[in-house]
Image 1 (cartoon, rainbow, N blue to C red):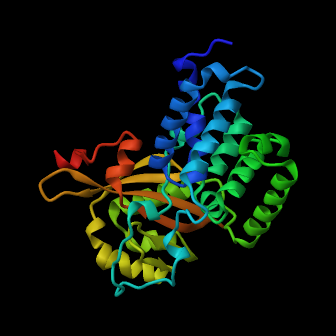
Image 2: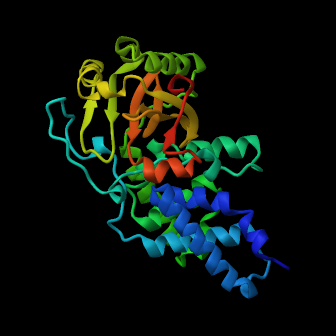
Image 3: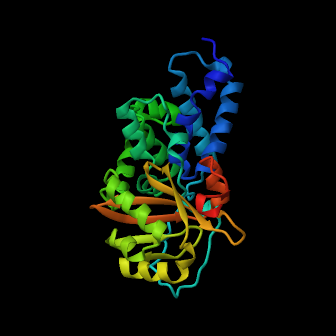
Length: 316
């Protein structure tokens, strides 16, 4: 079976989604996929065509990720690490490598996936699911992703990670027990009306209208800051206090982590608007459950093909 570099490249998006589920970082996933392509190219003479090319590449990518991860490696979300703060809380940060990051849908979901596959893959890159996977040791994480997302059998997983079938089944049992203890919001498909209201309220910086879209237990987080806030009133105080510099921002709708998202540009001091945050909204129960503003725009915006400075009509 003849395979060339172009054939390998056709699977890059699927592999990126797979590595993202394993690593919790879009940037790290891209690096892992590049290593996967290199390893695959060097091993092409050993590809016998007994499985599909994509399955063979998934095996390589899984082992690239396992080589990268230690048993203690995981990505965090701010609300997992301490109690909710207030507008008086001290702002502290962690390095980018500490935090779970979002990923552009287009970089993780193959365009040739059928509607059912697209729905499954979209669910599997949502922040809540990837965050839950981070609680699992790497080999358990791999077993869950390969079986629950890709539909592999325990025997196929065993061959991939060089384990016995009973060991894989045991790992899956332990993983499911761990995941079952983690609470997760029942995330809804995004109602367009709510998103339109959010976009309009943000552009007008109508804080009362924004707060009215939040659930009573809603959270606001802003990685790389460790601070997170909970509840409409506390979030309102933040928006009219330390967050008031966001007045005049413009939002560009994007697709990130299988969820509604926006690229936020904040008004610059010398004209134009500067990249400020990648906002990912998690919706549940008819409202916003989690408002995630990822501030590492130097890493994230290029992944979406977005410039770090932009001029809007009002700037001209």
